[in-house]
Length: 400
Image (cartoon, rainbow, N blue to C red; front, side):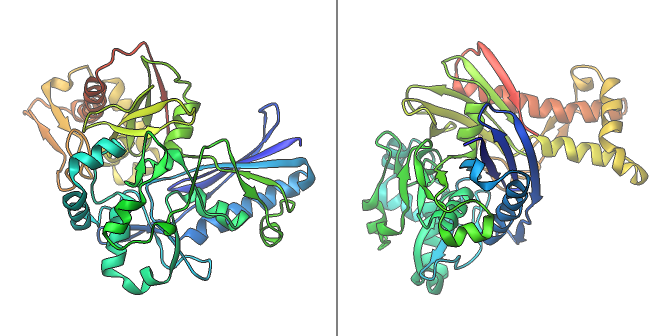
């Protein structure tokens, strides 16, 4: 083996990087993925992920001989519901993590099992974005889809792994988001499924990220270009990969991720029993990731720069925003911005909440308004750090 093909099956794009055994980047490619918005529903087509993966892989195997590419490993968006039918193909679009259609089903599940029991076992709050609730939504609202189900998957990369190997797997990081995994035992809780006449056999097999999921089948080889028998590893849900890559391994080390949305994360040797904290199994087997997630981060930057720029300046809106920020002062002239443009999940889950400026006067300037928007995001992050309740020794910043 000389090279490893690595991928992230993300929300906006499928990204591939071909690296050498020593970690040098040989080639990188990215393909944009369409997200389908139908009212409040947020969906993607699983086959789009696989086809983009294959197109990038064909470029890799053209650049370097397939015999020299010795392994494939992926990360991907998690907390999705991906429905695979008896024919081996998706029965409908994947329901994404940001889709909270299953609020009523979440309430039913919480009432039947008990909120305290769910939290004590999964160490996470249960709401309409959780895959278990979404599965019950499908059962109740799309019975023809449910009746045709063979397996469900929780992460986008696991659908690609299935198409490559024929095996249905989930890593314990993404499994932590399903609402059905005992986070300490790293096992599915099949008895919860049975309460709602859901067959636990629909769930994929759970693995640790470093374990092998299978190998490229002969059929898959014709699509992607890798040799039959090339090992495919289980990999990790994106938050696990991001946390590992950010270099935090000990108490007091924090990571702040700023993409369209964002989060504050630290690692510890146990889940954190706070309702505002989302807990994930980490890639190192003896660690947990304690996360405070935000819906609003980089999207606020994009919005305020777009608003401030004139119509003819849209291509240069960030440069203009930076110019305004350079002339601003801390405190934003006592203007405060609540950055809840698309609802929020912290400090409370409220999909209907809206953003707002407070303290505008005749003296308020553009510089105050743009700085207040970003200070609002900064204070959300600070609030997340306060909730975790540990004094940071180091903080790493990553993201788009």
